Image (cartoon, rainbow, N blue to C red; front, side, top):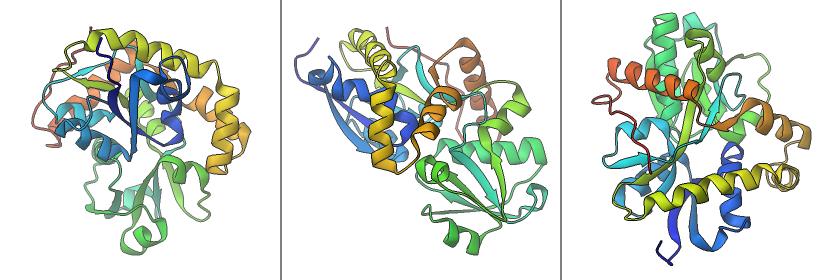
Length: 267
């Protein structure tokens, strides 16, 4: 393995913390150089070669050539996830315009698939910054993701949890992101154990993570603990892979990707 730290882009949202915390604080911390970015920027950094590994929004695997998935690890939910929400001023069947949070590409695809396949809706889409008030002044509904969605209440609005909607439609978990690496990393296979050990290390230190994330986000510690142990699953199981393949098929059928690339894994 190369002695230079591996450049990797990671997401600073709460749901990603167990995937990178061990790389920052654990025994592997000298082996990685972490850049913190929004999910969409993580994908762009991996695409450009700025980094060699990333916590990748799952849809971007279908849009970036020469990537491989680190086995066993992901950010998924069998629903509800609580941090990926469709927030509407009217019942879902009456949505005609939708504001999309541009920081997430996977959730933007997921909401379009759900609206079409579950409700036969194809609303007008308006990408924009994740500011709910402005989004709902322009549109009937808005997509919100990450810590802002988890931290907020939405009185008087209809709230739909997208992982729960996906589970209701398919019976499967939804995979939002996973570790991916560029195929040209000569010793990529040797990193798999490091990624897996770092996540295991983080999950053994959830109390410490909960404490620090409560200070960072202002969220109550019981909410953080429940979110990371109940709402989010960090293991890329066979059921999760089945859900991921279905997501890719549906995305292609809607013209959101150019094809359906098979899953290839590091190692």
